[in-house]
Image (tube, rainbow, N blue to C red; front, top):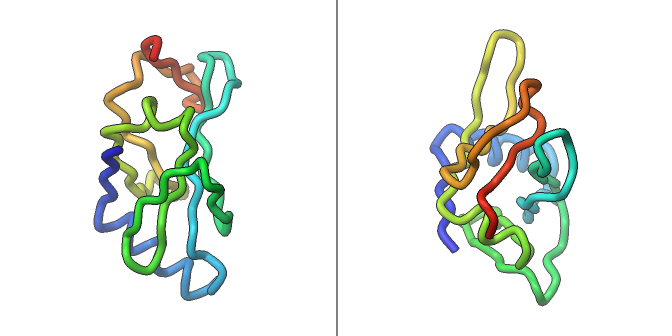
Length: 110
C-alpha cells in the first residue's frame, strides 16, 4: 500500500505527539456513511490489530484496515489552513465525487 504524507502534515503530527506521548499510531480508513457513501476515518492513539497494515513514519505509524486499503492506496495526507479552520485533508485520486458539504466521498467500485 502506498501513502504519501506532506511535510506540513508530518510537522503537525509531531507537534501533536509532543502534547500527547501516547500518539504513536494513527488509524486511517473509510467507513460507510454520509450522503456520498463513504466518510474518512482519522483516529489518534489506536493500537493495530493483526489484520491491519502498519505504515511506519519514524516517530509515528499509520494503521489501515484491509477493507480501506484499496480506497486509500495512492492517497496524500495533507494539513491545511483555510481561514480560521485547520485540518488534515485526504487528497485521494480514488475519489470520483464528494458531497457538497465536503464530509463524505464516493469511490469507483473496488
